[in-house]
Length: 105
Image (cartoon, rainbow, N blue to C red; front, side):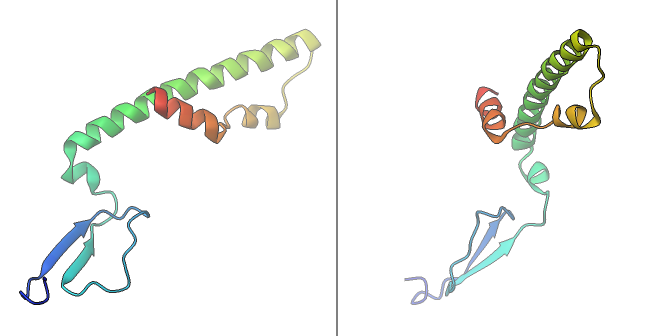
């Protein structure tokens, strides 16, 4: 065992909320990396993350424009003006749609 062999281990982990520590680790010293260091330590991941964000943002822009066009047509036909709340709601995305966009990206 590590204790019998007097081995010591330093484990570096990023600060993701999913990284939970057990109550006791005898010969393991766990250190969390500072926030927002993944892009510097894993530059290939940074490119993949940036590409994913770009694809999702592009999809969200299409989504908002489609909603905007629907609101515009409705109010044009009704001879009314959209409310501030309608405009604000236009930018909201439900979780299911966001997850689907991430899967598609």
